[in-house]
Each structure stands twice: as C-alpha cells, then as structure tokens.
Amino acid sequence: MTRAADILVVGAGMAGASLAAALAGKARVILLEAEDQPGYHSTGRSAAFWSESYGGPLIQPLTSASGLFLAAPPADFSDRPFLSRRGAIHLAGRGDRQALDDLAGQFATVPLERMGRAALEAAIPGLRPGWDFGLGEPSCADIDVAALHAAYLRQARRAGVELVTGARVEAAEREDGSWRVRTPAGDFEGDILVDAAGAWADDLARRCGETQIGIIPYRRTVAQLRVDPPAPSGLPLVIDAAENFYFKPEAGGRLWLSPHDETPSEPCDCAVEELDVAIAIDRLQKVVDWRIERVERRWAGLRSFAPDRLPVYGFSPSGRGFFWCAGQGGFGIQTAPAAADLAAALLLGGASAVDPAPYSAARFAI
Ligand SMILES: Cc1cc2nc3c(=O)[nH]c(=O)nc-3n(C[C@H](O)[C@H](O)[C@H](O)COP(=O)(O)OP(=O)(O)OC[C@H]3O[C@@H](n4cnc5c(N)ncnc54)[C@H](O)[C@@H]3O)c2cc1C
Image (cartoon, rainbow, N blue to C red):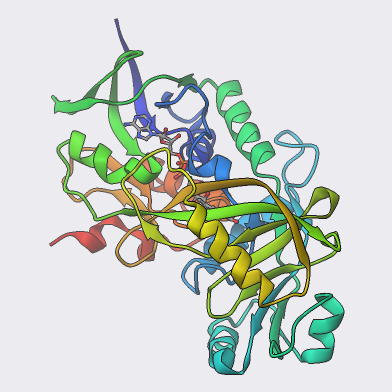
C-alpha cells in the first residue's frame, strides 16, 4: 500500500525534524528516515554550541533569530530553555591578530569585546605565553541538542506528522505532479519532496533526477579528555582565531576538544582518524599547560557545505516540487528554529523573520 501526504520530508535529523514540526498541522507530512534512530548522523555528533559569529555574517541572522526561541521556547514546546550561558573567547597570538580584527569588523549587532593578556589569563587558567590577544563573545551558549531534537519530533508527531524509520529513499519518480518514492519501509507519495538528507543531500537529489548542487560533506573530530587540573565548569568556549582548534568544558571537569578538521568525505557513518585526535592534543598542549590524563571518548561527524558555504532553502528551479533544506554545515543546530520557519514559509506561503534570498536554490541555476 502506498501512503500519501502533501509533503514528504526526507531525513529526520535536526533539519528535517524542525521543518516537519513547523509544517505540522498545516499540511499532511510524512517524515522518512533511513536509520532506525533519527539523529544518528550529524545531529547526534555536534559540539553543541550557539555562537552568533560562527559561520559568518550571512549565517548570523538565522542564528540570532533562533536564539530568541532557544532561550525562551513556548511552554507547550518545552518547559525549559535549550541554551545555557557559556561565553566564548576567540584567541590569537601576534601572527593571527588580523583574524581577530577581521572578525570584530564583520558584525554590527553581535557583542564582541577585546581582551588583553591579563583578562585572558583570568579566563583560561594555565594559558601559555604568546596568546596575548582575544575577542570575547559573552552571548555564546551551550545548546541541549538532544532535548531540542526530541522536542521537534514530539511536536511534529503530536500535530499528525508520521515518522517512518528504516525508510531510506532508494528511488523517486515524478509522475502526474506527484512524487512516488520507494523505501524498505514501503512506498510513499507526495506533491512535494523535501531534501533534508544532510550529507546525502546531493545523493538524494540524484536519486530524484535533480541537478546536484555540489554539497560536500567534511569530517570534523571531537575528543573528550580527562585533564589535570580538571577543566573549570565556567571555562568559556575557546576558539583559535586561525581555526586550528576549539575546546570547551564538559561535565565533571572533562574537556571537549576539536582540531577544527575539515576533511572531504563521502556521505557515510564516519569514524575518527586517530591522527586527528593526536593533532588536536598537540595543539591543545601549545595553548595551556594542562596534563592530558586520558582520552575518554572520541567521535567524528560530517558537516556538509554548498560551494558558497551558505545553506540552501528553497524549491529547485526544475519546477518538479523538489525542495532543498540542506548544506547546514557547522551551524545546523544553532540555526534550526529560524531556518525551519523560513523553509515552512517558502513551502506554504507566508512571511519569515529572516530574508530567504541569500539561501535560495536558484543561486546555483546555470
Ligand atoms: C563534530 C561536529 C560539531 C558540530 N558542532 C555544531 C555546533 O556546535 N553547533 C551547530 O549548530 N552545529 C554543529 N554542527 C553541525 C550540525 O551538527 C549539523 O549542521 C546538523 O546536525 C545537520 O542536520 P541535518 O538534519 O541536516 O543532518 P543529519 O543529522 O545528518 O540528518 C540527515 C538525516 O537524513 C537521513 N538520510 C540521508 N539520506 C536519506 C535517504 N535517502 N532517505 C531517508 N533518510 C535519509 C540520514 O540518515 C540522517 O539521519 C556540528 C557538526 C559536527 C559533525
């Protein structure tokens, strides 16, 4: 039996789940997820921070608009905020000072504060000599990613969205103004197909007979360390201005550390390369004098970017009812609420808080 809806959303990570929740009750929606667990891929592997400067000035409007929702969600969505204050420091030595100046000059509305050596030493105990320049970003916060994703899925289901797991879309055809898709969990039909397939966004487009955009997944590694002394719980997120590392504290004095790697990959269930963990530790040891006691956990996930590193929200110019919701790179969690509103407005008609023009799929039309 073929199950039918107005809109088939393919992929139930943060992008697909948040969009399904935004559409719920306004259209008949089926959410198709390849894995048994939604959130198994990039969404379950993030570093879980919200930073208005992250991703650049054209990502900032989506991040800032999302921050309002994440800090104070409606009571029927969540009884607690998804953000908790962390603060961030963009750190530089003399050679990378220009990178801090460039960052400071990009944002008119994001509070960024110059920090000198004394303020940096107070904020980052054990800071080694040479790291003399900083830009504080006090509004940076941690995000409770699992709770946010679960809340979106809950809201979607409550308003009638059907979530089908184990439903990898293997083939899709457009016939008589409708999509017909085949999955191991059955066949489905819908007027519109939304591509929220994360690292598989281009692969899904190909299966649908659409022109690919050139969305490339890149591997990013995170290691959870035990350090001595334990990482203070009030430590801010520390990001290297030259983009060679970032670290932030985790419960129990642990540290999350990334070498800021960006290795092109096939879409896959990606695994850690031990060399990336070793590089991360080497870089950390050049920043602080902490002893590394052990690596407790390590993981890697894919961050998928369009060629211009902006996300893609909008109908394909093909006119076949194929809608892109892809290319969320390293900011797909912190931008999810505003991006879902924007995509829902484009799908259903209506206004969104953020201008959709920079993210249009038409920018790739030849
Ligand atoms: C190490 C790391 C750190 C990060 N840190 C942050 C951070 O601090 N803040 C932030 O905002 N973002 C961060 N990100 C980025 C963020 O995780 C992603 O932008 C976001 O999770 C993307 O969500 P998604 O739903 O597009 O992708 P995914 O979560 O990967 O979901 C896509 C889903 O589509 C499914 N799928 C694929 N093909 C098919 C098909 N043919 N049929 C059915 N289903 C299919 C997959 O199974 C998958 O579940 C980080 C990412 C990584 C890897």
